[in-house]
Image (cartoon, rainbow, N blue to C red; front, side, top):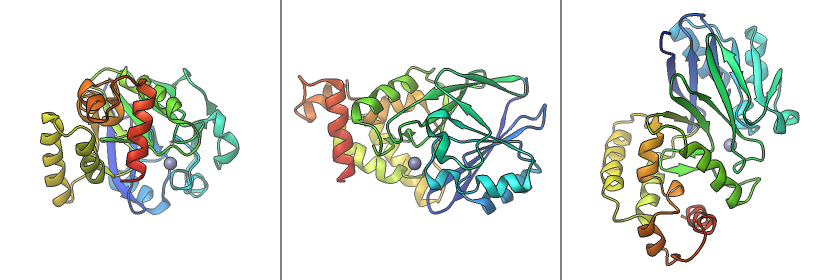
Length: 256
Ligand SMILES: [Zn+2]
């Protein structure tokens, strides 16, 4: 099987646009549809024709171009059943544990409530690629709009259980600010310090920080590290539950 081809580009102010292309069948999926013109430009640049939109959640900055793109392409919009009413142009609903085909490959649906109640991530296990949108960012996680912290902690644990080498494509370029925050929670983590320096250099040169990997996030992302003894000590929360430690880290980030 030829590897998937991926095109990454900026949409709106800080959203990532992502196109996924299967060279064997010509199928091309847009992961969400944040803005029409950048998606059209990216497809034209690669000579790809959109066949799908994989919607992760209902926020406007992820679905705004669904209908406009549907007008231009004969495409299918796939999205989470728990947000079906809020997703324009939805053709096919998916739920946790569902699998569907994209050409010859399997796509697995992982429901990750937290940022929104029905947010889903799309996992391509054969390619070891995850599209995590606003659940897991480089050194961050999505803000809790529709579900409590404990739900998000359990959602993040599902993603952390994927193989370490899994490439993670996320929804927003927040990495610089996430790195500054992470250092306030996990100041003695040498791997994080090193990564923060890499991120400073990347952003100073206007380079994208996408993708990351599950392994790197487990080593450096404070939102995946509520069990870490040094973090718990630093927060004076050694005897608290993982969910409580995670909730405290999320609260501090909201006020950062
Ligand atoms: Zn969102």
